[in-house]
Image (cartoon, rainbow, N blue to C red):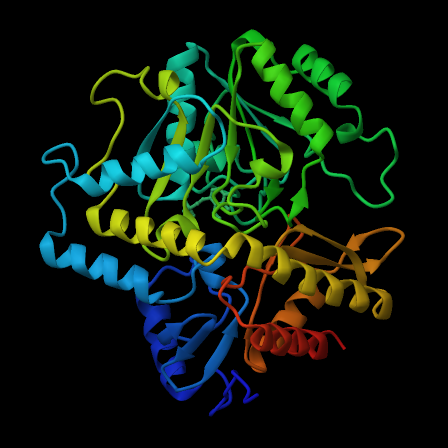
Length: 438
Ligand SMILES: Cc1ncc(COP(=O)(O)O)c(C=O)c1O
C-alpha cells in the first residue's frame, strides 16, 4: 500500500511558516496550537497543509470528526441547506431541521422516557445550559463536578473545569456553588480503599462534609475524562451515583461532548454503564465539523424554564442541523461505533506491546477508540513526564502524524482519529508513533 503520509518539505513548510508569522501578529497567543501547520484541505483521516504535505490525523479536530474530514454526505447536506437559507434564528422563524435533529437526538440517546432537546453552539454552552436548566428545575444552586474534569472555557464551565494551568490561572474569580469530588477512576496500583473504590461511603462523606444533598441541583460527570487524560469512570461508582442522585432529587448530567457519537464503541458512553442521565450534553462529533451542541434530557426538566429563558441567536443554525442529521445517519449506516471498538482494540494491543518495551509508559487505558498511554519518569512513583510526551508528539508531527496530549500533567497521549480511518492508515500512524517513542 502506498503511504498516506507525504512530506514534501521539512515541516512547517515555507507557506505555513509565513502564515504562522501573520498568525502571531494578529491572533492572541493564548490560543494554543498543537502543530504550526496551516490546513489547505482535509479528507477522511488525512490533512493536507498549504505546502502540500499530507499528515495522518490522530486528533480529528479534538474528537470532532468521527465521520471523517469533509465527509461528503455532511458537506452535501450542509451545502444544500446553505443554498436554501443560511439563518433565520429559530426564535424568529422556525425550520424543520431543528425539530428533526431534536427528534433524532431524543430517539437515540439513552433513556426510555419522554425527552426534549435544546440546540446551542458549543460544548461549553451545552454544559452551561444543562446547569441552568437543572437549577431552574430543582430550585437548587449547587453543582457537583469532579477532579480532572473539563467542561469548557466560559465562566461557569471554566469554574467546573479542574485543570488550573492553562485553563483557570489568572481568570478568576470563579462561579460560586461548585463542589468537587475525586474522579472515580481505578488507577493501577491505587490502594484498594481509594475514593472511587467505596462509592457509597465516598458519596455519604462528601455530602456530609462539603455540601448538603438537598442544595445540589446536579452532578456533572464525564464517563471518560477527555482533557483529564482518558481516565475511565468505574461502573460501580457511576451506578451508585445514579441511584444516590435519584434518591436525593439531584439531576445527573453526563457530559458526552468528547465520548459521544460512537467514539467509545457505543453511540454514547452511557450505554457501557447501563445508565440514562436526566440531561446529556453533546457537541464535537455531533456536527461532523460544524459548530453545534445539544442538551437532551427529560422533557419535564427541559420544559421547566420560562419562555425566552433558553436559546441564543445562532443555536441550532440550519446548516449545522443539516450537517448533524447527515453525520448521525452516516454513523448509523456505516456502524462507526462498531468500527470504533475495532480501532480501539488495534490501538490498545499496540500500546500494551509498547508498554512492555518502554518502561516510561506508565499506563494504557481507554474505552473503544478513545485510547491513551500515560508517560512517566518511573512506573513505581508515576511521576508524570510531560517533557517526553511533548518530544514524542513533536517527533511524530515531524514524521507526518498529528497527535495531541491530555491529562492534568500533560503527560497522556490520546487517540481521537476519525473513525473512517482505514486499517492501513491506522497501522501507518501507529508505526510513526512507535518510532517517535523509541
Ligand atoms: C467533555 C467536554 N466537555 C466540554 C467541552 C467544551 O466544548 P467546547 O470546546 O465546544 O466549548 C469539551 C471540549 O473539549 C469536552 O471535551
